[in-house]
Length: 463
Image (cartoon, rainbow, N blue to C red; front, side, top):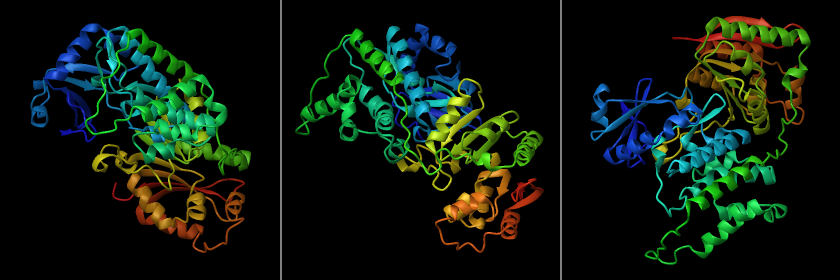
């Protein structure tokens, strides 16, 4: 039983993990607030609408070892465990937008019941498949009359400004949020905002005006403080409605990437495409994995196929536009597919304080099965990743792999080499199989009909 590495900032309690079980322990001050929250009926209403993670209250003494970790635990909740944690710098535009609208929906419903969200960060939101839920129930606290929404600036930095960045310029927000866990400051967003957007009332109010106010009222000396302005509850509700209405109308503007419009599946002979789908489906059906990682998933054709038999499929691709399309296709239709913007050549690292708050990709594995389809040639010929390095990494993140070898004679491989010197004499099927067999046992080898490509099903040596 250990305290979760990202819960140390909460003065009212802590998140504790024991095996597959997740607990939220409230200290006495937090327990008092939670008692009011529970009595209000707000939590039950939010849970019925699927806006918060499922929870149940249990006596602290029923959790052996809890008080060794949180000695003053007064009230304890057990939460449904999130199968795979994801973070805002891995979400496509539509996922961040849905998480923002979920946050505002909760904030409005809370205010109507006399509560307020003290935090408004996407790190308090997780996705169950394609459904966003609030996981930090301690962020709901009683509202005091005259109190402004103190989380407004946090919401703008981590939700609104990243969405505006992509909607107005086409620049993806993921690298910015990955580089700064505090988000995009209003002053920075004001500099980036195109002129045609500056006169729009929504952007003017929440970006330019906010940036100006921050400059005007920034403390001049260390001891200079200003009391927060008193506002009516109706004004806070108006602010929340304004944000929700403005964000609802934002649409992603996608800057073209090298793979925009690229459809790998279009280059297969129909029989080869059918045979590949059959091979993948039979492999997933045979293993029935709890978790599948689909690397280079593009718009998720094989992720959806694997989702028929796997507990959870995490589809990963470096193209935000493709992943956004994937998310829109599965949104509301499945609960076991999670599309994410992750570049296998540069996956999410450990982030935050002591590099422990937000886990990197490897720390969230390993997966039971990894799909690595039509990807090896990209990693080797474009990313200069030798076969040995690739196989070693795959053995670290997955138990069973379905991997496709694309020879240099293939039209897609030739496309990658069109403007590059061919310095890849090691890129051969024989060398690939030798590297693969150093870490895996090849269970099945299947040459695709009407194609030079080969599919492999392999199991990691040593279990």
